[in-house]
Length: 289
Image 1 (cartoon, helix red, strand yellow):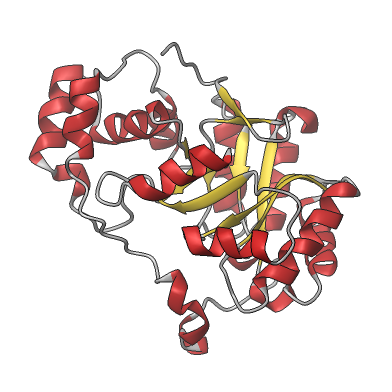
Image 2 (spheres, rainbow, N blue to C red):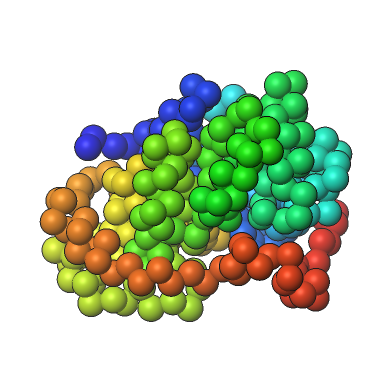
């Protein structure tokens, strides 16, 4: 599988989406996010993933502007937070203003909060108007996706972004999405902060064999499955390292070794219980300067 940093997957509406992007979850607004975005684009990344609830959309926009990379060459994703589920148009228009762009390439429902089916129908209209080129969902299980169809959605989501890494391979969901022509995108593709995945002896052994870092090995595993990855980092050297995935290719046997690590171990909140999550545990929206 000949891949490069320019490699992309074709969404079900014909739009090309890079296989690799920079995630900015928990990246502080201001110079931290601005610098990370600018650095990633300078290193050849062409996709940036943010969200309203990350409270760093303005900083993402500033980093994009600083990079001098043409807007049309950058795939920008942001997400609709629950506060705007009753008015997705307002949510998107405000995100566009913060980002300093006329459209986003991908707009996602961040979680299946109450009212997600109606909110998704509104996203279909925003897509028809060109305010977002592609639409999708995040943290949706199979039954949530089926629910969209049952409630009259005419557009199959282009993307479903979920927590996905060797400890939580999401094999059933990936197979479903393949059949439905939905691209699966992995957030926390390295397992999230404080996990033991990077020190797993099977990962360590294979990374030694391929002479790559454990992170590079894990990211390569997912992109060879056709899963888009958006590793987060604010460190220039790590941003560069996470993009150097194309000088090696995992054999099918080694892909299986990594896949066998799966324990269906999710760190994120259970999306079936998201409406019962205490309000005090959600991030607070802080407006950027």
